[in-house]
Image (cartoon, rainbow, N blue to C red):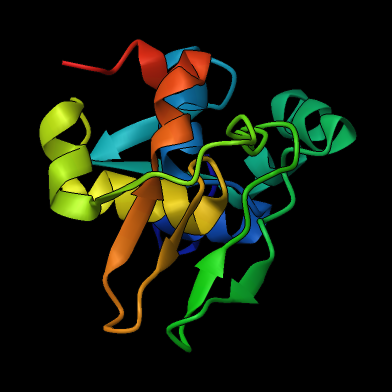
Length: 151
C-alpha cells in the first residue's frame, strides 16, 4: 500500500474513478480492489485506480459519471440511461372520461406523488384543468401496467 497520506477514502476514490462510492465498496467486498480499514474507513491506494476491475468497468462504459440535465424546477438531476427508462404508456384512445388526481389515487395502489411523477414521465395520460388540478384519463385503467395496480 502507498504511504498513509496518499491513501484515498471510498468517496475520493470513487470521484477520481468516476463511479459511485457504493460501487467502490462492492469492488472491495468482492476482492477486486485492495483496501485496508483504518479507523473504521476503507482506505485505498491511488495505484488501485489502474486495477483490472476499474479498467473493465471503463470498457463497459459504466465508469463514466452520468450527465446532469436541467429539470423543470430549475435544478439539476442525473439523467437516467436510456436502457433503464420505461417506455411511455399510451392509454387507449376513445375515452374522454377523466378522474381527479385524488380519486384516481383512491382507485389504485399508487400514491399522489407517484401518479404525478408518472403523468410527468408520460407513463400515464392526463391533463390539467383551468384551476391547475390534474385529471387522469380513465383509459389508463385499461393499460396492463396500471390494470394490475387497481384496488
